[in-house]
Figure 1 (cartoon, helix red, strand yellow):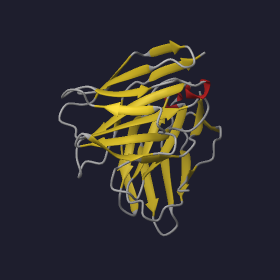
Figure 2: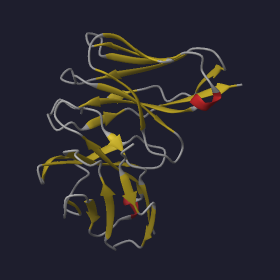
Figure 3: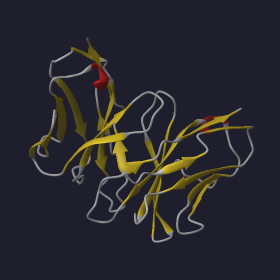
Figure 4: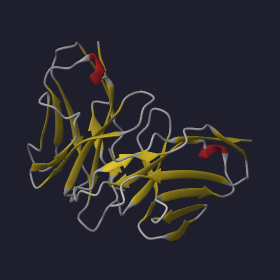
Length: 112
Length: 114
């Protein structure tokens, strides 16, 4: 069973701090990885995608991928209370259909 | 900005009844998906659809489920005889093409089976 694992949290950080969210995956055939944000009762909203080893930055967000360690992370700089949500890590399955395999999500709480 | 839309937003049905969940993917997208999320659990893949046929389905997607693209815009998920355990949020997603890997999700349909 191909899995994506995340610590469910909650991860609590003060406003302005860096939040670090982590994810591991089991399928070495996965090539593409995504971070989605999900507010309670809402649908997943894409934050970042990453396909190559290393870092990818977009504004306050940095995604990191290490395929050798099968590890993906998301850093949120200058965390804001509005960043409080559940962050879902997802990996493309190794089939070519593009299906996403999701982790259970990490709940982030940013305290003012 | 183009977006995936879904109707209805909420559906309440009796066990054993048929339900049809509707989705309008982003125009010009070629790949379509259904996922579900039981309350408090992870988002789970149900089925992928490309070129008017199912390209992959999960173990959850048994004979009670079917998908259809009846015209050039709608993409539907039918559950023939609903069970209590089908209660969940159902998300439709679409993706542009082979070299465009990002999936965009609709707002979801919350299905409650009584």
